[in-house]
Length: 305
Image (cartoon, rainbow, N blue to C red; front, side, top):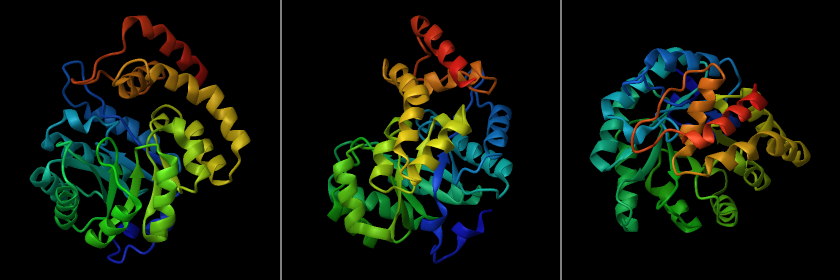
């Protein structure tokens, strides 16, 4: 295990998570069962590179299409392969009792921290949202990363109060892309949390411009070199280099990904297959890349190759 995250004071967490969170997909076989051998191979390749953490069964990992048992097995497999080389962050969520159960089981599976997805109910009042995160936080001794995406929208004051309410909250992963609000949150809350850009590789320049210390990368599945170079340039405020990388690698990818809902996973898995990794099919509610888009993905694979 990564002992630094097990420290009860968690005093070093903020300074440890700098650079790139690797976000491995969850490979499935043609019958849509888990391809754990493929997962092992992908993660074994990923940890050869200096990511600051690996997120298992996250959004890119299709947690929303897996049972709790499957998600736990994905985390257990990832932990075994990583073998303490970097922290493993496990996705949890759905609703309050399921999220708490997942938190306990992910801790038993060896995870170092938890990435809490928004609750399934999209119209929860503030009190209910806060109860959701607090209950999951109390279910294990692991640090929490809160994923602020979709309907999990927070003001600077709310984030500050959440820090008081949920003492294990250590990481804020932004998935809103509202740079104006995120900067205000960061300024008000300060160094109480580790600040992470989580909307996508295409938002990396904006995130690093306001001072995040890391970002989550789906490109980490196909090119450690590109994702790590983006973070290195971002942390150095070298936006000229970032712009070059964005123009050649990131914008062409995201222009395909935005064509159909769910392509943020489908396109990545097809690219992985083209580049010799283990991607495989996606599970419903996602769909495969449409035939008329396949050649565009293959041409993009040549760029990454």
